[in-house]
Length: 193
Image (tube, rainbow, N blue to C red; front, side):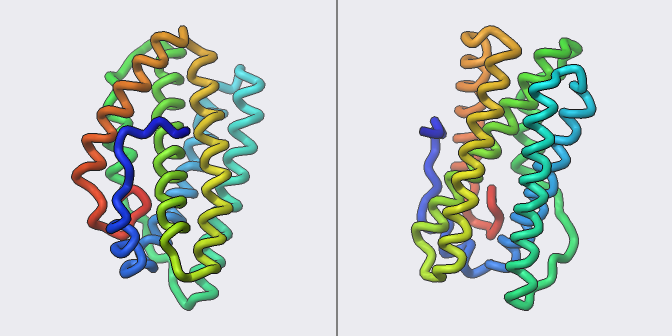
């Protein structure tokens, strides 16, 4: 369904469980960054009415997710702390060369966002399926559905702004790059770690 070229190993779940507070901190800030990305798209592509409408909805939903993660942390006696850089997202953003072509730049942003949502969805599923903590399992199953919806929305928009064949080639290249990157990950309690 997601088209990912590398599946998360279940050993990551143990790393995530052992570093639950770090995982939740990372997750909370990932939701904030996703909201900020959606709002940035609305600012930079404000003439695209349908896109703006959907990005506003995503930004609101991502901030609601941030609030949900934060509330869960507070209930468990955890403190949010400070954000750290998301090296996963930064590496993905560098995959595509810089371009002055406005539509191409948008397609690149949309493809990166789609992949981040797809990987989040996959990680949430792996985590939920191997979690004894029912509250956390249910929490991540619910979020997984939202991430899948965001993934399809971003990918659909990318295919709207450029020839589908070209977009699909770019998507396949990005998927292969991300798969190689993920082979070196899985050892930290982070959503994309």
